[in-house]
Length: 344
Ligand SMILES: C[S@@+](CC[C@H](N)C(=O)[O-])C[C@H]1O[C@@H](n2cnc3c(N)ncnc32)[C@H](O)[C@@H]1O
Image (cartoon, rainbow, N blue to C red; front, side, top):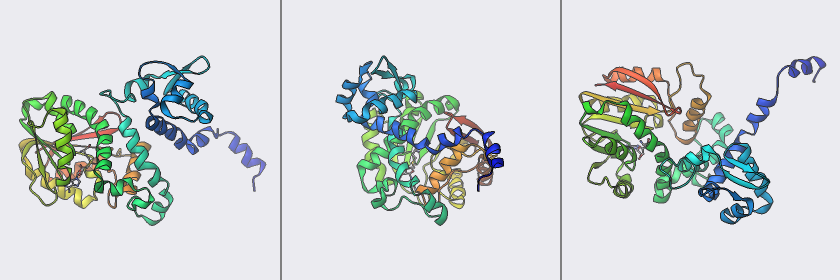
């Protein structure tokens, strides 16, 4: 029963943040739908009034006003006058399709992978089982390997990141000291393409499952690096990992349990040339376990994979030492990830 005392105590605490958190997914969903419907593309050439946006995107007039105003309220659009809209700075920089900085692929990937699975979080929390495996329950992640189109969308979403990761990593590492690299689990070769573009002296390789080869061939061919990057098909737990000065593991370790991570790092150590380096990036958890975004990413991995999760930087340091690497250093990457480098 609520007492006067309870009300007095509660009045001292603003409930606003709680209400905002309760409906936080509504804002995310507005962004996802805007990308899917092509709102930001429709405004790529400049401002337009609501009628023109409705005609270009298929928005229903009953929903359009509040939807476009909500996008403006979230800072993604700007409104002038009664119903004239233009892309805001974030949308101009990252949400216009066809630009080199486009992050819409990641937004769409998030939309496709998050909503079905996070809708079953309570079930996962009480059973411990991943919730993505049944395609009939909207399991985009679970069944993507069976459908090349889904696989392509998955990789396109990741590439929204790897484009920018590649530029960062190209600038952070002294590549003049190295002559080769392999991107382990390098998917369709996007990060590798950025690295060879920035550092043409590098001999480049991508190692991934054989089923990824056609997507690699298509993507790297389209980017014009077919003769610069060699694809090796195989399983990095059982097949030989090609030797290189630098081996990159991006979004790999978070897919496996601790024993598999340690096993893989030992295998990578054997493949890195002496004096070479390993580069690992993931959304690692800070050692104090306080960064909510990283912890949400970790829960996401637990939701979509049987054994995966994010992991602490300190844990990675220990696994790297155990595998034989030295001088591990962690640094932030793009504000969303952590890059750890270590020496063989
Ligand atoms: C989450 S994706 C990361 C792709 C890329 N590194 C990035 O960060 O954008 C994981 C990649 O690892 C590959 N992979 C998963 N298990 C593998 C295995 N046992 N051997 C080789 N590649 C594997 C997948 O095919 C996929 O391309």
